[in-house]
Structure formats: structure tokens, C-alpha cells
Image (cartoon, rainbow, N blue to C red; front, side, top):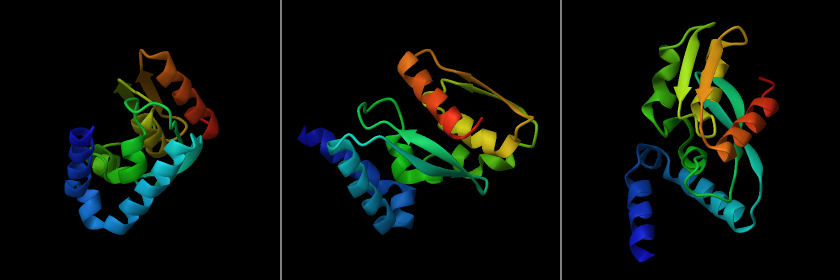
Length: 139
């Protein structure tokens, strides 16, 4: 358990989002801890290319995505930070291994209602969350 927590802490401290704004990340970590302990189901705001969307955070499962995005948001991965420059309105995008739909929701906010996202996800638990995310964002 100690090794796991130490690795997670080292990862967080070395993350570019933490280096850029450690107070914000620590506050999100405290909030995430409260959400996990009390099993609070919550939608939170994501951002991609200057546009916002809502994303469902499931506090129950660790490895199905969402926690890292909750902490680091658009700075979690380079595609979330700069991907809007690769997309245009009405594009067609494939999100293979969509998990909970972070990339799908991000890309939808850029390509607009006439664009298409093909989200491929084999796990029912994740597809259920994708459906919640789509409904909440009226997509």
C-alpha cells in the first residue's frame, strides 16, 4: 500500500499541471478524496478549445477513468491541451477505447452538432457512463 501511494504521489508532484498550479491541484485532490470517501456522484466541468462540457465522475472504480481528468483537466494529456487545433467543425472523429468518453466529449465541443464521433468501448460499465455524459451534454 505504501509503495502504491508513494508512486501516485510522485506522479502527481511531477505532473506538469501540478507544477503549473499546485494549489489548484491540491484543492482538487482534497475534493476528490471527499468524493471518493462519501461516494458522491458528480458532474464537473471540462474544457476543450475554449468550450465547456460536463463530465460524470464515478467515485466507485479506480481504473475506469475520470479521476486523472478530474485532477488535471485539459492538461492531463497533450491531445486535450492542443487537440482543438487538429479539429474543425463538422469533422468525423473515431475514439477507439472511449472509456468514459473524455475525448469524445472534448471533440464534440469542437466539431459541433453536424460533426460525428464514433466512440468504441467494449465495457458496459463505461458505455453506461458515456451515455450519461452524452445525455447531460444534450449530445
